Image 1 (cartoon, rainbow, N blue to C red):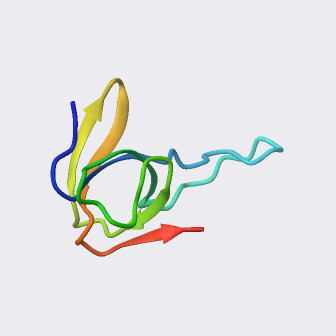
Image 2 (cartoon, helix red, strand yellow; image 1 turned 90 degrees about the horizontal axis):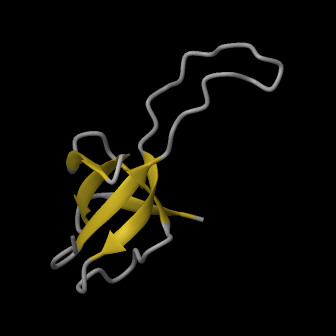
Image 3 (spheres, rainbow, N blue to C red; image 1 turned 45 degrees about the vertical axis):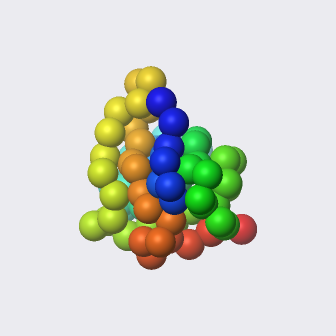
Length: 81
């Protein structure tokens, strides 16, 4: 698989559900992930970058057993430093 135009394949971060002491916490939805693939027209987000995105953006898929989302770079995404 490869991305076209400004599309990004982002692997979703898995939320932490327990603390170090073993206390279970209800995770808030996280819309942060790592770019696995970037299309040739992507200007800012490259492979390996961490991004934050809005919940209504993108299409959720399973890619090689990983929960991912396909985003357009022009959608409102933010690079996480």
